[in-house]
Structures are given as structure tokens and as C-alpha cells.
Image (tube, rainbow, N blue to C red; front, side, top):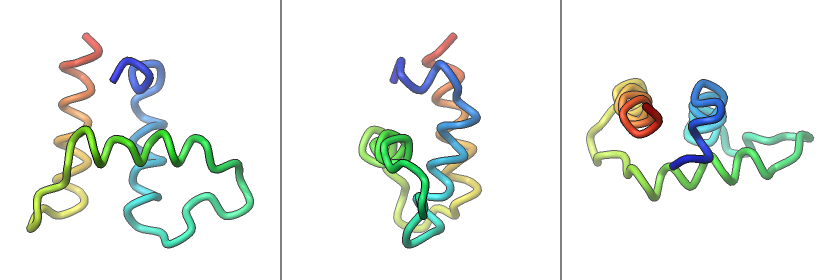
Length: 67
């Protein structure tokens, strides 16, 4: 998780795009989106968990891990 501590807000932004968009990167470089997508494996989204709740949970986990 340390790689997400450098800029947690940006990681969450990329993660939100990965969750909500079929092709989140568009014409941009894909690497940041691939890195953010790994969060889905590190902190899986619950089956009935709404995206907003999931992103809040990830944010809280990042704060705990990074501090």
C-alpha cells in the first residue's frame, strides 16, 4: 500500500474511474489506472457495497496505512 500513500486522493480518483468507466484511461496512459485497479484486489469491494461506501472505506484504510 505504500505506493498509494504518495497521493491517496489521486489513487482514489483513478479507482473511481476504473469502477465506473468501461475504458477509464481513454487516450491517457494506462499505468496509473492499472496501479489503482490493484486496490480492488488488496481491498475487495463487498458484494452489495455501493461505490461511494467502498471508496470511503478505501480512503479510511489508506489513511490508517499511510499514517
